[in-house]
Length: 270
Image (cartoon, rainbow, N blue to C red; front, top):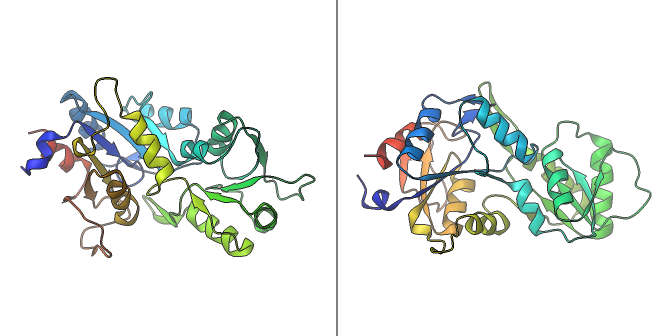
């Protein structure tokens, strides 16, 4: 066992490619989470999936046998740190972003592709399956006018049992290109979500200690850099976007490189 693994009391788990593929559990993942929790480790699910509401995430996990009430944090939730109460926010994203914008005390204006009659203060872009040319035109025009563009994440794809599909980052890239506005990113690996996660791990007797935390993910450029931002350990699993044999590019440091979440649990629960 690596020395650092003995001190881990919190496991941050990505969802897509780590726990499941399109809500189909990866072999051993449900049992791995149960084993980690049985060993008195907290498991927090940290996802760049901004389309789903918090309740949707929790119900989807419960449906595969993973209780998750209070243990999910998404890139949509991190948007609350980037909008102000009273802002008019054009939402080119899913219900999760609408929920977050509303909770921040801002007004969500849904991008239907129809010309806006009133200006907005900021545009938020995330994954939504009804994205089309008209919605692109409205989002880009609004972003140019207000000069503020927020992306929930830059993930260009996400893994499914049938292979990779376009992700919210692909939509964001189109809006950023058409508007000429540089987006601020809420989700992994950026600071808004990192700050939110760190705040959730603070308890009254104990401050946030990144060396007691490991981030488990399938994307070095997202999950690995997120771990670096938090200052915690990074476990790369090869069950999603990264598969066995893929070469890790860039300077992302990997502390544990294993097949899947089940193997992570075996290393931690000895």
